Length: 245
Image 1: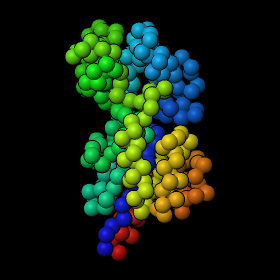
Image 2 (image 1 turned 120 degrees about the vertical axis):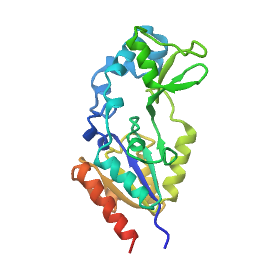
Image 3 (image 1 turned 180 degrees about the horizontal axis):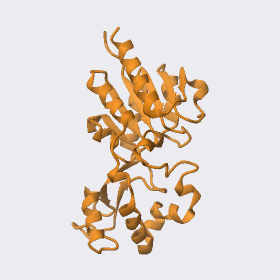
């Protein structure tokens, strides 16, 4: 018997156990502090060297690159290793799904990755760690070593569009899956939130694992309110057991 395709949409809540706070949510840092929001807004970042200098200092202090996967990330990778077809669609930029063992080709990063930098002029990419080493060495605003263009984190800033190719793949996976699990996401930020409804429209079993209510709870086949670090591993073990019967 073919095992069902499981799509997992992960939001900030899956990574809080790894020590990464929710920056982007409605109550997150960016929304509470307009000055902080400027540091991750494309127009301000591109036009103001002082904003870029402060952005690099913020990245230098950011805990994302030092974070380790937690039990929820590992449970997702374990499910994939067990032979269940799994695809991860993540709103996070921390790369923790891959660090936990999910093959990179099976992870779609809707908002990009904080582990790389990209040149806004020639689009060359490189490791964030290399750029941060230049900041540590005294550069306020490191430029692209290939063309001298402005470097930014390879994340989607406010004012930037999501990559249409990545979004298109996410939509295709959502339409094709038999089980869609939304975990740690408020399901309020579009277009990612709409994937939950799209999955339900296409007949998938919709499971929502989140501490707080979401706009899609009434569409879900199951809503789990427990702590993600224990609730998601238990849910995925149960799912795997069902698939083996």
